[in-house]
Amino acid sequence: MRQIRFCESVRQSTCAIEVLLKLEVVSIAAAENGFPIASSCAQGARGLKFYAVMQPISHPLPRLFTSMVLLGVLGLFQTASAQSSGPVQDATHEGTITTEPSKIATQPPVGSPVEKTTPPANSSALVIGPGDEVEITVYGAPDLSGHTRVSADGNIAMPLIDYVRIAGLSSSEAEATIEAKLRLNNILNDPQVSVYVKEYNSSGISVAGEVAKPGFYSALGPHRLFDVLQAAGGPTDKAANEVMITHRGEKDATTLLISKNPSEMAASNVALQPGDTVVVPKAGIVYVLGEVTRPGGYVLNSTGGITVLQVVAVAGGPTHVASPGRTRLLHRTENGFQEQGVDLKKLLRGKAHDVSLRNEDILFIPSSVIKEALNAGALVGVAASAAIYRIP
Image (cartoon, rainbow, N blue to C red; front, top):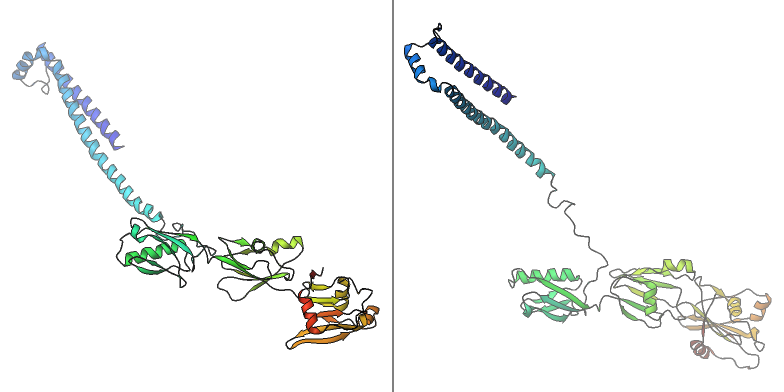
């Protein structure tokens, strides 16, 4: 707004100067032709003579003077414009400076959750243990690199820094530990270490109990229960319908029932981690020997309870030469076997109460042809070699 007003005033001043110059020329011309000259316009005879001399160039002079005035006015206008633009630029710079703190304030502080991009440590990560085979590489220092095996106390030996304990650490943690020790002993200023585990002998799953091939099975990463049991040859005929799982660092074992229902088997196939121990316990077995259709040992089901009549029925019942009235039952105790007489003939006719059986009981049904019966020691020997069956 100020610039517009300034330009308007300059234009008016220029027009006024041109009008005054034209009036001066007109006054001088009138004086030469004999017309009366106003006192304000005529400046005496000297001025008239000067005009007479300069008359040939009377017309360029006003224009030249006007151009000079215009150039001066334009120079003043440029100077005024530069001076007026200075505060605007200063104000612009001031606005930039005042807005700078707001930009800085919007940046997240160091250590805020936005900058924390490191993922949380995985609890199932493989860790180094005694007996593991590792290869240490120190970049730029081949004399410090080498191939070694973790000792029983969890240490490895390295040149110039003696022993370093890496048992219980992951590969990245072992690298940081070795780098810190190299830096602490002033061996290297900025060491770069790589730890590669070639063989995890300690990170496996132990399988024991009633399996075909009990032992230690390497497991690099999580595995399923059924995969480990299959690697161990599967459960034996004497295996119970349950497993006991103990995780590394825990004392209490978790008992898991293995269901025969296909819809429930998926829930039993839990994930295992390196360091877990799986124990398949032995199931309860009762033996039916002597004169029955299918003598042998019968694995108790998950309920664990069975009676004389039930196990005899599963064994196919007495043969035609059996002497059910002289049936003998042997209970295992801390002091050996305790013998008890059972009248199977009355049980079959419903004239006596059924008898419950316990784990490792031996039910012997003698023959009516052979009068001499086997003693307890002989029956135990026969039971050890008997075939094993599972009760449905």
